[in-house]
Image (cartoon, rainbow, N blue to C red):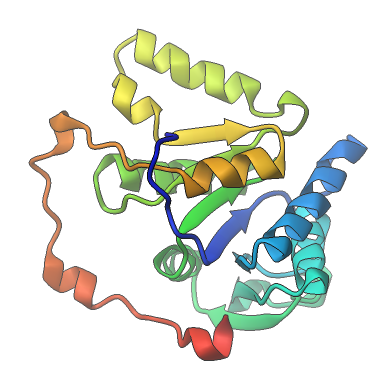
Length: 217
């Protein structure tokens, strides 16, 4: 949600397809996102590899001067599956640990066009925001209207009273990288009163592992 406050973003977690997709605009917009991240001195955390849109954003960000960290499950750490990770690679044991690691050490999230894995990550991170586990901005780079039907589905869920209007505002979207990052940086967390009684253990939050950003990002 846009507002007058500024959300400081140093590290962004970008996830999306390991395929370039059917339309050339998908890869073009993804490459441009990587360039914009570099221009704005934002570091990239991603799922590793060099294939598809994931490869496009990581290569563009790295060549532009951003520091890049790929977090890869050991089972997928094979170049024939993901390609060669750009920048530095951190291997973890499971998919869940990959998501948790990336989640803990970034300030915002961008989803590119993608398939089941991308959708899983969008809703995983968004459901955590709904439950007040975090208040980090979540966004979709809606290239050529790729996410229009998903956004319409969320609107329908509000109409049918499966989502509150405030929960629907968790996911923001824009058609260009510049617009999207501007929205992320002006993001103000939305507190849904219906979830205000949920309080997660502060002891658990203290246990969060912190990457040595001086070494990794």
